Length: 116
Image (tube, rainbow, N blue to C red; front, side, top):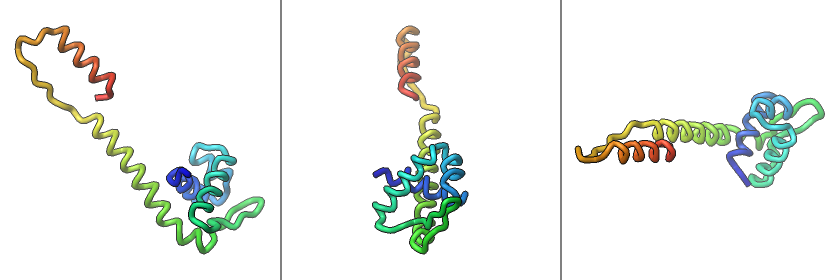
């Protein structure tokens, strides 16, 4: 089970009060959000929402779990941003003066392909 994806769906749906709007906010279909939350409920061992035809309400268990789910999503987002920044960080390349221009050009091309 993808706990992060389940937590992201849980946070989005709880913030918007419906599966349809919460799923749309997360950029996923409603059916996917529903499956992810059901899997998360199974993983955690309790119901997160009381569902009606038009809206959802957090259960007491859901209220207890929501702060941790939010933290997990926030940490994952921060980690992704940190990784993007780390990949953009400039680096120094020291070469001997005798290094031919085509060799240097190939090194730069290889580095760009590798995302450096």
